[in-house]
Image (cartoon, rainbow, N blue to C red; front, side, top):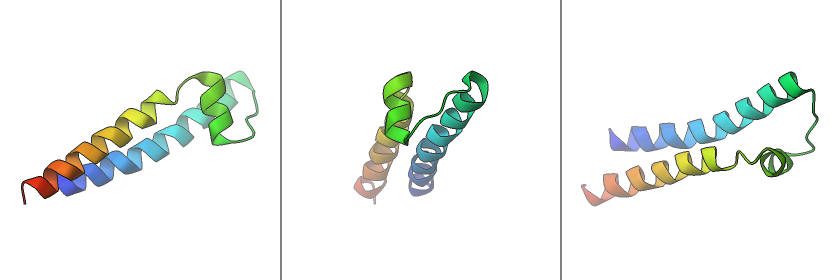
Amino acid sequence: MLLLISVLFLLSSASMTFAIQALYQLVFKEKYTSLSDFCDRTELAWIPSILFVLSLVTFIVYFANR
């Protein structure tokens, strides 16, 4: 179960970044050259980073309890 949760956190961190980028481009009509450019200019890089850390922690806990 924890392995599934860690995979979901990992997938959501990637998809959330792309979704936020798409919303910003639609709402503010700004174009970003890359994903890192988007994260630098909007300062929203912490959201997928936190989800990635949660994924890593749950993955470690899963294998520690195995």
